[in-house]
Picture (tube, helix red, strand yellow):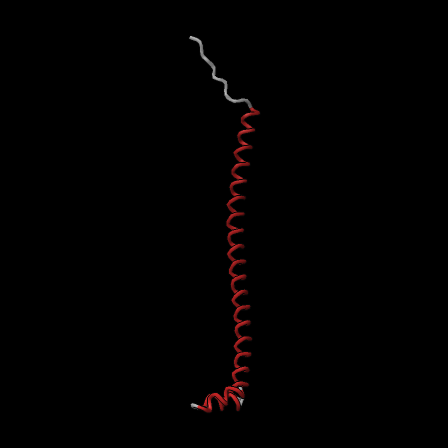
Length: 99
């Protein structure tokens, strides 16, 4: 009986497949590292942005609160407004005109 020799892949195809496998593995590792790095950076950026926005809002509200307190103090020190608030009946109409 004759032996049938099965020819394997040529050297070129073996090298091509081995290099292709190495490139696919390297690209997969790089993709995983890139994904984890960008996810971490995005989370840090989002956290910083939210904290900065909250600080801006807090500063704005504190400024408004201080101006509101000053306006209330001015109104509280106004004798004409005080007279209007404390008046009753007929005096209310007269005090309302002066306010």
